[in-house]
Length: 253
Image (cartoon, rainbow, N blue to C red; front, top):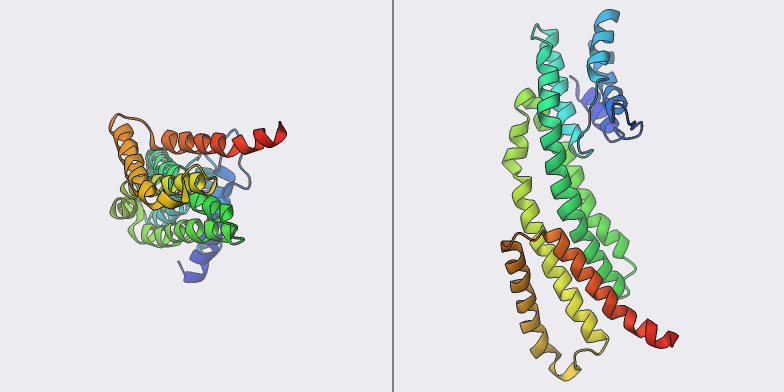
């Protein structure tokens, strides 16, 4: 495949959920991304039909990792044109779309997005108009790098493209990002208490450091007991909302 065709396939993979449907999920977007490959290879009409039918079957995975799957399957389609069996396409799609979905949900939805949201919320609290830009600066480069680098690596490796995911070890990174999010949320909570005069300004530094340490240790204890870090983050957010709403209730009375 030429670089131009690969860029077109990668670009189209960004729109895999545009035609999301409840019957076969992302199949239309997947087939749409494969069209530049057909235009370059120029197979016979029957071969085009067979390829499109293969990729119009049910498909559903995390949208950010779909590019990785598409890269692997483009290489496999090239191998099929050289005589490899077509059955391997269905096997790879069925065996990888579930794990890719789980890995993507854990890292992007369960770790990176909450962490970026907490940091952006803290900047918004301090009056920073760049809070939305900060969120995008944290979140967007990461998923764009995974999409682009993963697509090219998986295209080179074909059916062994999952080695790219194993190499960068997203589940391990997700665990560290969750701890970073909890730490950022703890700092934000202590700062909110300080700003709302719950903590006296004269002893704020003496109180904030032990309070932050105690908060981190409490989070660690809850995690060791099997409590999800997501539940801890949302629980902390609810506590912050309760504290911040007390002044509103006082003003209303």
